Length: 284
Image: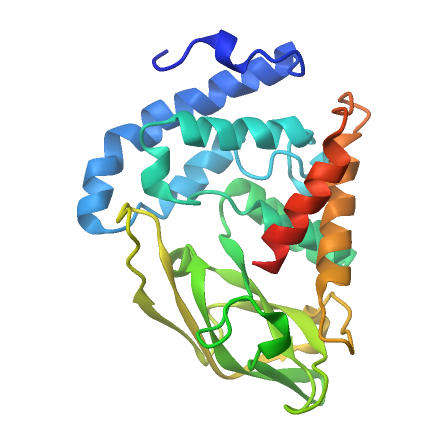
């Protein structure tokens, strides 16, 4: 193995199983990422198939319960994935890269049983790439200023608007999109929708250039009269213009369940730190 020594990661909180998982993750970056970074940077984007290879190696959504296709791991398995991403000489070039955890945990926390059984195994295998779609060109991540709308029409919602700074935009198969469900000028009511990018009316804009100019992919998504079945909105609407109750509390709850999984020992002091993390990451 190349890079840092094991002692750098030995902080007394990782089990032998965690160390074995770390070695798997490190080997994956050494074999599947680092030899290909130069080629991907020339192309301007890494290969979509990297998700399937990561899924086959068990790197995607490692804390998702086994009944939904995951490995049933705990919070420290995610910590290891992020650390090894950072330690790898190719990790910075990927940007957020193969991380799809936030949107997966939102479905785990608040999705219907049908949605969890359909989507989460596809997340874990790399068959599906999905991200949250919150940020808009004019308002950033200010939820109160969102202009994307979802208007009820019988058993469907009709979605119009745009999103930007979307991670893995060119690779996305589905996004968790935040949209207003009432008229502009009123206190916004917001809901989250599962929107497949193959639907008529969904289009992708240009890739966004960043200072580090690696092979990661940030881009734009546009929605023009996109029709989504009403049951694709698993999250509650809020009259105060704040979707944090549905996303922050639900995602935190799901991660805390993983943190206290009977297969793993809880990590002391992690709950309040993860609550702050989920609040930030979900709102972005």
